[in-house]
Length: 129
Image (cartoon, rainbow, N blue to C red; front, side):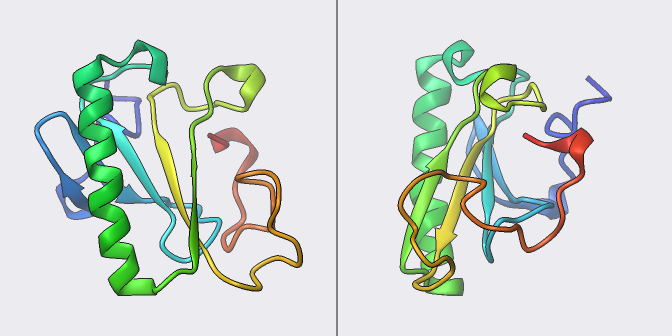
């Protein structure tokens, strides 16, 4: 699928990988270290991924968390997946957000995943995912 941004991730952008999934930094991060975990196979949603793909992605979530712990020393994390248009999904290749959180990055961190604070980089309307 040449038009899918996650089907054509440049090797230089991959920060971790395994046979079924890969990880990269989000081009429009909410916080320092915001990473995405995506299956190699083009699949639209979490619920369409095989159990093996879900397991591979979960393994990478832990691996990338360790990498981010060393590189950025966050105080916490949000993990999120948007499934379907009504949930805010606009890129229909499954991607799991791993968002480092830092004490004081918002006055009250309780609540949502992406819109809890302004992003570090403005996120274009046509690429919200």
